[in-house]
Length: 224
Length: 233
Image (cartoon, rainbow over all chains, first blue to last red; front, side, top):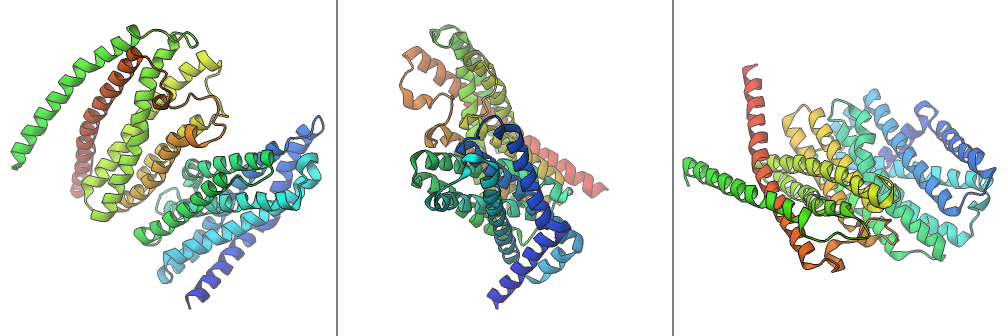
């Protein structure tokens, strides 16, 4: 029964993310526009280094997380689904479903981003092993950004400014996983193998944020 | 203990702390500006270190105390823990502003720039500062006082993580940037420098204690006034 509720919530959240204002199409256009700007400004004179491309990728995903989370919470609040849902379903389920859907959207965006990078940046090609190692760092990084972002978005519901406040609160809390994640990827590119220390730091962030987010839901009793 | 006895003893503590601070603070400033030799590689600007590091210590551990008080509030539901938590965040914000002003003065004379965006310690400290600003913004935007206290308590736990990461930025990152390493691990200070440093640490900690007491009372009074206003209206 619980699994069924979670599945329905997940489906609803995913639809909400992608249906909102042509969500998927606008995200792909945003990614391509940003990458094209970098390509147009730099790649004509010199080839961007792999470290720089990795930095651009992390930063873009970071930016996208604000949009996905804020957009989803705005759509839900405007539609009234938030009020109806929280009356019947535990806040923890809603939080987890939102986190998983934002994380999936970010993962999908990162694949689009990687694919676009192959066309736009000369030095962005990588072997299959490097691809796997990159995702071993990106996935926990994105999970931590999604977990803290959704937690903040749930908290922001109690404020007068609602989702406008999300970036202000999310920036200081999601900067650390971003910095440690980029640092780990830089090490991975230099040594050719996955830096275990960096991987565990980013993984710890995701576990910490996810646990604390769930705990916050329990403590605050849903969105209160 | 009766309430009047408690008030009397806290009055004596105030006088004692203020007297100790009035003696130690001017002496530590005079000592650190005049007695230890100048570090030739850095020039006179190195003396800002005695102020900068002592103040940064307080700015870093105040959020940790705040989060502990926040956890106690969530557990015990007693308002005093939320007042302590808020007072600590206020203090940390003031001290972190002092760090953000004193650091660039030193950086300009040593690195040639006020701010280095590639430095992990600087970035993590700035994230902590933003987190503290976010904390007060969050508090001011939640009209319900009980909700405000609960949410703020949870938020302090996140801020305290930032504070721990700032402490660890020069220890855990492989290439943290230009920021000097830990002063405790170096062993490069001579006796006079150590004396000046620990005198400043002591005096800023006494200041921290005095300000904590004042802020605790201030926040308590502010809340009492607010409640009175609500009940009148």
